[in-house]
Length: 441
Image 1 (cartoon, rainbow, N blue to C red):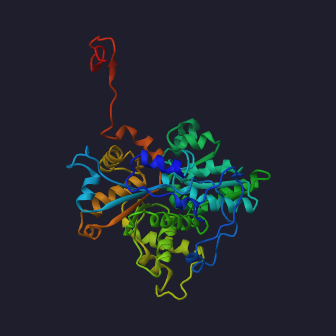
Image 2 (image 1 turned 90 degrees about the vertical axis):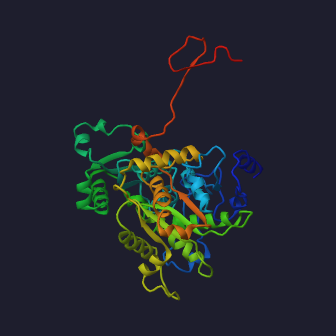
């Protein structure tokens, strides 16, 4: 604990959280355990009463939890005209960040590992020996699933949606080594490709189901466990019920005792939104709940309200004693889904990429172009600039960073404001564009 406080002090993270939450029930971390060992999961009391289908096979402990939560503040060297943080401070908005990008190493970091702790526990308990999942070409979920599967002894099979599917069919090495794909290949995943059109016509769930059947019939002894896009189903979403309990314990430990007014995060496959939206609402049944803002990076808000409701019902969510009407009525009251996909899923505008770079320079925090970067850009540059932005004035806002920085590799050549390199001239040779230090010291 002392070393943790020293590190936080050294990093000058103002109003850094105490580490008392690390020893609590929901955030305690183990050392020296077998990663394939499953542990009993006891949901928080507010969840027990509202869900009939609890995780019967417990959870694994794969993630580095609790992830850090701290406040961001502008620094004297930040330009008042362009500083993102100074703009927020001008509205008296205090911005906190929950760093789920730090939930694992490069292999498993991000929000997916929370879901995978429950999904892979279920797979192991039911004696599956492989996993099949699906996502985009630079899928963070597929990368985390493949690595986590190897950690617990399961064989990973990944379906990647890509416009390059036909080209890769002609030359398999065309798939390359960029970003998440490098990690997919390093852990020996069997990778299959499909085009966006094929993905849309057949549907991700049907595609995963058919591949599982094919593997079972064509490979003796292969028993594949299907995992949906993003790990977002009634089992995986318990990862963020647990995450909400962790976050609330951390927030309560902040010495200054600020109110938690708003929670903002990216929404792609719906499982994170289901866990956070339902969890925060249920944890505040007897008190005012923070407003939950899910920034949709694909599809539209109505789709997400419906899909999150389906996940809730898969979890056995029931409304006895509540006045919310249907499950979807409750979901719509629990969170607000904002349109934030811009040019479309995994398509970035120059403005979004500029924002990501500026934020990194100001804070040292790298956002990704598909999820967290798009979400925070939408919040700061769009939502706060409308009449709706006034509701955030003078409030405390928690941004839940869901990871995904490996996706930046594909965008490297289009990023602006990147720093450059200078050649040191140590012999005084008047090198062009050199920095002459021959007479220094």
